[in-house]
Image (tube, rainbow, N blue to C red):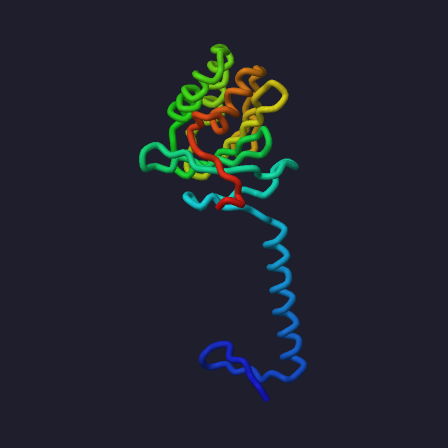
Length: 185
């Protein structure tokens, strides 16, 4: 007869039926864990360890990368068609984040009023700054940029040049970081 030890004093005898039910239980737990892992497929940006879902709002993850400033890995970015997810790996105050994005837009967008509105939207959407773990979503389709912070909509700027310019921050020849397909990693 086999037994299982609960602690250094308690020994519980296991009958054949108890052993089978224990094995069945453990197999079920392993199966549930395997299914849970496969349902939440994600790709991990290797330099930051930040993961991105394989699909976001119905669009597949096309590419991802990391924005650095000197040796600091500021955020990881994932591209889903015309939507860009920025996940902060380093905390930044709202002024610095909004200014950095607005500065990156300057050479890519000739709509100064839209850039100013975009910067104000970011400032208002980050009342506590952008601490590590913050997610910023920029949907650049339909001639506008919809901005969400931590899944909360904080504004929409209607400007086709702004939408095109924002996408260019990550996709044109002078992109602020290099995006790679998850399959390249």
